Amino acid sequence: MEQTPNYRRYKILLLVLTGVVFIWGVIGALDITRIPYPGYTLSPDASRVTLVRAGGPAEQAGIRVGDTVTQLNGIPISDLATLTERGRPAINSDGSLSVKRGATEQTLTFKYAQQPLVDIITGPGFLTLTGLAFLILGLMVYLKNPTRLSTSFCILSLLFAVALFNAPYLASSLPRRLIGAILTMLFAILLAVLLNYCLDFPSTKTIMIRRPWLRQAIYLIAGAWGIMLATITITTPHMWGRRMMILSIINGLIIGGYLLLSVISVIHSYIKASAEDRRATGLNFMLLGLVIGFGPILLAILLHTFIPHMADLPGERFYIMTMLAILSFAKTS
Image 1 (cartoon, rainbow, N blue to C red):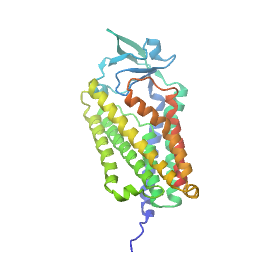
Image 2 (image 1 turned 180 degrees about the horizontal axis):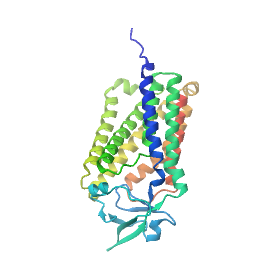
Image 3 (image 1 turned 120 degrees about the vertical axis):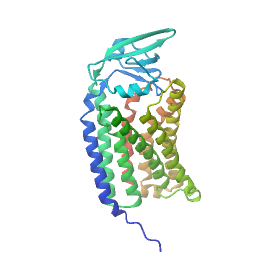
Image 4 (image 1 turned 180 degrees about the vertical axis):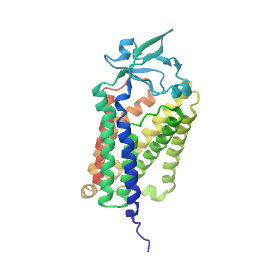
């Protein structure tokens, strides 16, 4: 007879990991108010201005939506090594953006400001609180009933917390790149674990039983993508326009694809389940949480992937706040 795995044996490990991630989040939270505010947003390939905030430094400098970017603070945007080496500008320091408008190129200067309170609250502040909620709830669900799904949910929550917490800033370039590479790999693992969790809930999908190699493929594809981004983060190669565009498209397809497949997997489970099974397994909560949590983000990712230089969608900077709905996963674990 096959022995049932004892998931309680992971208790100490998960407690230690939760403590480490919590400390990481606290250190990162203390740095939030030091993040400079330029008042503009660039396209995923960093070649075009897609948003200029009213009253911000960029607007005052004359930067416009649609400007083609050639240099950031005097450094060509293709020179990833120098941009990474220089690091984060300080608040009240001078900044510049060299842009092309038609045949004319000009350099527009501004001063980096402190983030508006609304940006702190709806941006890194909200993400930190959401990450903390994931961290606490994931551990509580596991400790209450250590099962395969609750253990997976706890691991998923740890990864979500790491992804959502503001990473502490390091002045030295090499440690900053190494940590960036590690965080990139953890994010890739997060996508794979999320899809794997959705395919296993409330029971393993038939396609996964008949084709077990698909589970390996989920992790291999995400892992290869993570290794590629980690390598770019560490080596900082020259990134000209076409290469940046290709990388942006790959990122959008991988992230959007994994999120979309996760949503489709839960929808499939919902359709196949009876009304009683939906109530018993919490599928109603899970589907609602997944659609609300990822729907707006998924829409933005896919649109920006296929229309790289489009302006931000209305209220796009608030879309990340919908991720709080994913905590409904706790009701299903």
